[in-house]
Length: 502
Image (cartoon, rainbow, N blue to C red; front, side, top):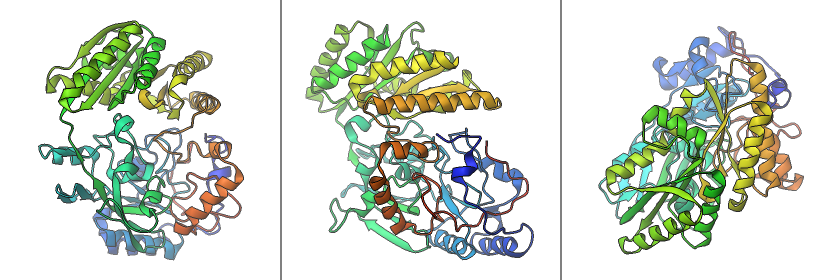
């Protein structure tokens, strides 16, 4: 985790040169960027920049000096070349839904916001792919495919706002990851602007391309390899039928044991989600779905596939849940009922605002059989710090999302959140898991990298990154801990009024 009292010591490169605001190089930089995108596609007033000082990880904040809104690959290439000319760091941002500080502009610089690049360029149903721009909202692609018999499988919980480019950067998952895989399993190819401004194409619309799987290497780079400007994504045939159920349990332990036995029985649900009592109460207060407020946990279970097989799979799942003291099981008998059940899951995070002014969502992974242990540890951590923690997560693959509730206006609470988060993630490692399943490393978990990987591992990762980003000018100080002299060359812009990081 990032220490808020010592952030600059390991994240911000020493200032070797200052570009003065209002004259000289800064003015020239603004002028050249304006020539590329126009004056209505550029922000540099301090009050306007505050909107971009953080992503969904609100614990750390650092505003950019300039925000630019390109509309084409050519504009992005030109912007990146200008940043190189002035030796100014830059990074891309989509919807800002990252939960690990992935689009935090460490030390300022130029933020390239991709939300105006949101077009579907091609849908090819015969060959089962679509080509989209990086600012395309995930759900908008889903909606565009309705009625075609195909869909784009990755569906993060922030599907209604997150972008395809951001999904590619973090290799996002979602509720249907258990059966259909994460983003990298559904990206066939992409176009990207490298950190020197050159444009490359990796992969292509066919399932197999000769040579190395470079687009596979690119997915999940968290912005450190450049900026994705187009994506060729795989379309998946819609399943013939679904069976969707809500299983209500008295205790979390009963629910987690049922999860393990469902998977052990050879059943691979398309989704297997858990919500604990805290999040159930928030959802019920917000949306009135009819959840029992005294339930310890609720499982959302969905199987899909051929109609002929699903009733038997659903019967076996119900049998397993009954063996683990399920209180009741609700089945969706119509598409409308299914959508209502999914709405309860998808809107869980939106309901948290009723519980707390601020929250921090963690993203640990443990083996499924260790879910009871990590959930007990989370509860003990909640009691230790006197902090409310609620849980909603992808239980089928052991990806836990404890949500720590706090008030960001209280510095003591921020410190407690960081300490509690570190303890929870450390416990995930102790149980044989990882510190991230889909949110990425960003800046939040950068200090964990040396605990997960040895020096040789980190050195090899640096070599791969440096092939794409040798000057460390693009999305600097992300994913890998600073090492040696790296990240020392980029300029930090002088910007009066920029808010200091927490």
